[in-house]
Structures are given as C-alpha cells and as structure tokens.
Length: 183
Image 1 (cartoon, rainbow, N blue to C red):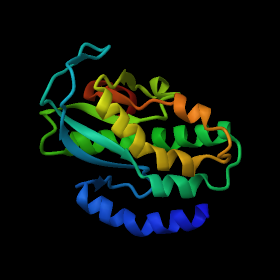
Image 2: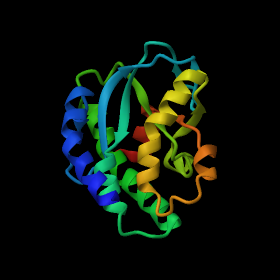
Image 3: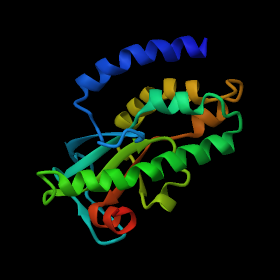
Image 4: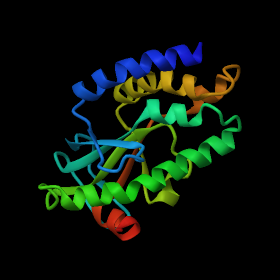
C-alpha cells in the first residue's frame, strides 16, 4: 500500500513542483528544493544578531519528500532514519550556500527558512527552531505534514507521538550559513 501511494505521489510531485515555483539546487545529490519568499511572521532576532522582519527576503527550503521517502524506505530503525535525514540535509547545505551567494538577489537575502515537524538535531546543523505562533496556520501546516509523517513511519500503531509533533519554523541567517557551510 505504501509503495503504491509513493508511486502515485511521484507522479503528482512534478505538478506540485511547477505550481509551488520551487527550484532545484544545481547539485544532483541534493535533498532540498528552494524558492524565494517574503517573510510574513512576527519579527525575530536570531542568535547571531540578524533581525528577520516582515517582508524580508528569505530562501524557503523544502525537503524533496518523494526522494527522501525513497531513500528511507529500507531503513527500519527510527534512529538510523533520523541520522540519514540529518546527513542528507547536512550534505545539501553547502550547495544552498553557493546558490544564495551566486543569486542575483544575494545582497537582499537575509537567510533561510523552512517549516518542519522534524526539528530534532536542527540546532546542530545551525538552524534556530521558532514556534509558529498563529494557531490556524500551525494547524494547517500540521494537516499538510500529516500524510508525509504517516508515510515515513515504519509503524502506524503509535499515533500518540504523531499528535505530540508540532510544526516549527527553522531559520538560519545568511551569515551563519556561510560561516558553517561555505565551500
């Protein structure tokens, strides 16, 4: 059943890619897709002193979920799956840094933003985890992540931990990204 849904999702993914204005990073082994966005949340001051204010230009990162789920399908241990996701994101961030520095809006881009329910280990990658304050938006994102979360689980019996997961913003300033991942 899971492989059937994943096959169907693989067919729909190019349509989603087109409609969401996502861009692939130049490196083929990258797990991220990106697009420019204007920040619409509350003002945030990152730990390195970078302010993120309403309408600031950020690069929004998206995990390539179909590619990720195919990568994880044979890994049974949740711990090993988490480590693999961490490695894939870590391997992708230098390409993201190069993409931003070579972008024609590089001087305007203040950082990167993502929304995820997978926030364990994110701080070790350099991200700051910020709670989504708007309750309706948080609920909407939780519902959007629900199918991905269910497909990625090895066991569908323990749904209580699913209810505990809350979507959060992941933010990183451009200077932190460069400091940690410049090639």
